[in-house]
Length: 144
Image 1 (cartoon, rainbow, N blue to C red):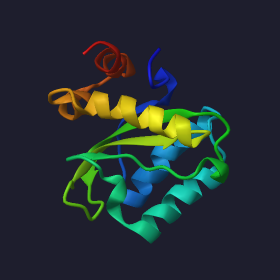
Image 2: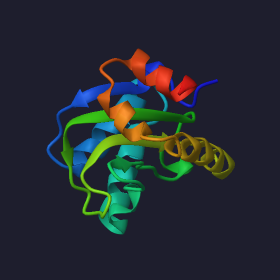
Image 3: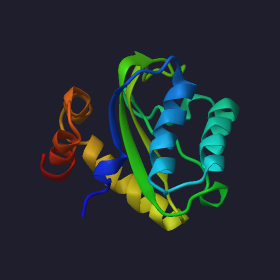
C-alpha cells in the first residue's frame, strides 16, 4: 500500500509564497475529503506561530496540524511548485510540499517513519520534483 493516494498529487503549481503553498497542499486534501477547511487554517496558524519548522529537508516542507483540528481521515498530499518559495528556513527554497493529515498520534509517527524512509532515498526530492505526471510520482514512491 502506498503512503499517498494518486488523487492527492498536484504538480507544477504556481504559488507566490509559503502560505499559499501550504494552503494549496491542504486544498488537495480538502478536495479529496481527508480534511475540513479548519485543518488548512490550523496549518497556516502553525506556520505563523512556530515559523519554518515545516521545512524539514532541503527543498522539502511538510505542513501539518493536530488531528482534532479538522482531520476526517488520514492522508498525505504531494505538490510540486513551478517556482520554489522561501519558508524562512535553511532548507529554502522549498519546491516540494507534502501536507500530512493523520487521525491519531500513532498514525502521525507511522506516516513520519514512512516519509523518512522515502526521503532517505538518494536524490528522491529531485526525482519527485522532476515528475510531470502523478503516475511518475507514484512509481518513485512505490518502487524507487
